[in-house]
Amino acid sequence: MKPAGTRVAPGTRVRLSDWDAGDTGILGKDKSDARARLDEYQVRLETLQEVLYAEGRHKLLVVLQAMDTAGKDSTIRHVFQGVDPLGVRATCFRTPTPRELSRDFLWRVHQHVPGTGEIGIFNRSHYEDVLITRVNGWIDAAECTRRYRQINDFERMLAETGTTILKFYLHISKDEQKQRLEARRDTPHKQWKFQPGDLVVRAQWDDYIAAYEAALAATSMAHAPWHVIPANSKLARNLMVSRLLIEALEGLNMRYPDPVAGAADIRIV
Image (cartoon, rainbow, N blue to C red; front, side, top):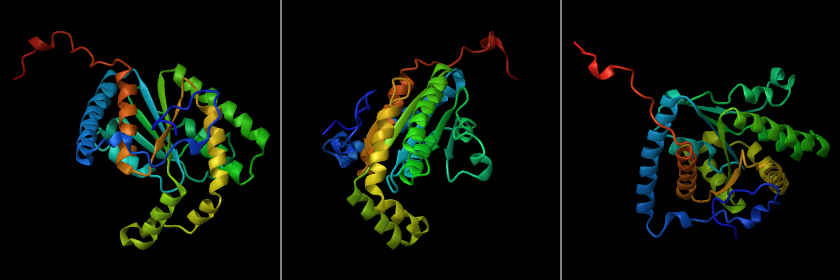
């Protein structure tokens, strides 16, 4: 098994079975310590996001992809719960509208990339256009390959214009998905999330895993790496995503802007 949170190296073949979706090594021996660590990460991320916003030089794009129930919404809620909403924008990409379908597949995505000082979060993303479309046969292999190239070019352009890109595949097992779907079906406050269509996608599990493996292998680049995050444990998932975000932001060597000249001498009455 590969280490948890391993970055997918460019040009390598991806077998998701090589990653243990249930890996909880990041938690250590004491879950209470792990929860305390997550609290510390949230405080640190809040500070880093404030500096990012204040400095106004860098941009961060976070892409979340996963099979149903892996916790994209939950990851956003728990990891980003302390940040200033003025500097963070989350976008969920659903079924394209007729207007969106009349344009290239990246058109609707480009409108939501972060500006300077912002964190943009994609809950699903342009990768849907090489996943659901491929599994259902709406595009052929040649078109899928073209889209991989177009995605890589698009993300390279974002990176070259100041955007740090982190892409997370939240990896759950089929057995864990079954338990979570049953919880949605049986728990009153979760039943609104349960859709019979989820079972159609579940029946295509192997096809989706193959599509994810191909997409991760074709589009994990130095400028836009994929990370496979074990997601059977929600706490382990949140810790790992938080740590990788903090490492990326700290690597930007940001600082608060200098104060206005002469500010110390200004008398406030």
